[in-house]
Image (cartoon, rainbow, N blue to C red; front, top):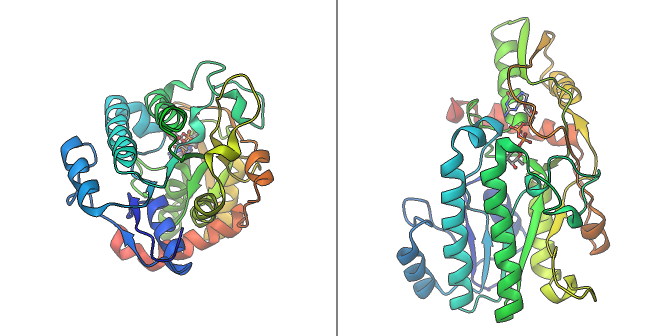
Length: 323
Ligand code: GFB
């Protein structure tokens, strides 16, 4: 990939897409192609085909998706599976039709079974039932990853699938109904401090364990994959080719209770937490094995407390645009 290569970043305004655009620009890649949702509806097959025909990207990063936290996934089940399948099918197929040199498909660690040995290894895929609350999204992401693998095997494409763990960072979603846990707790605890509230509600038991990766760290892994990882690197001498996707995370688990105490310290909030067990916990254990990405040469750099400090400072600087 050269500094003047035509690189299309689908979903450039989102948490992941915006981090990847920042990383590419800081690294000297000047020929980025971006389209807003209103300029290009990725669920529309004809418009995606016309876009590829006109723009002819050489590299594609598929960071566009219908995403959300546990409540959004559990509520908008049909939207999560339909929109993500449509986006993936259109972008992956057109990347093949138009000879894209490399595509990066971004999935999620929720593709793994609800109960699986920890830390979760890539080989655990499809080895058991999925977590109910995000099954539609997980099925869509598994389909996208398998589609990349199948196009590589049948057509010789070079489509790489990264499976990030729970991500957080600048341009995160702070809408309490649809957000993930870290932006939700930053907002709830910040607001409680501002309003001198003595208690903050945490959903669930506080016991679930998660592996949280800062979005700029994930963007760093995405550029590393674009520059250094190819499909043939992922083939081992098994009788059949499968599980060619790559986990990306910290490999370090933290409970939601521990997370809330870290955010309480960063925000300097003095109140207490109440755990609302009427809200779902979701998967109880979701820490991923990062041995594969580490052996390929990449490791995370930003630890959880530093990442939360970075995000909270960003939140305070951008508060007027977020409310
Ligand atoms: O981040 P989160 O919504 O997604 O929830 P998942 C993580 C844990 O935090 C759950 C708890 O056990 C929540 O019950 N939690 C506590 C909260 N308080 C809150 C709160 O105020 N808001 C939210 N959102 N959670 C997602 C999948 O699962 O993981 C997505 O639904 C995606 O599809 C993402 O795969 C990576 O980690 O449970």
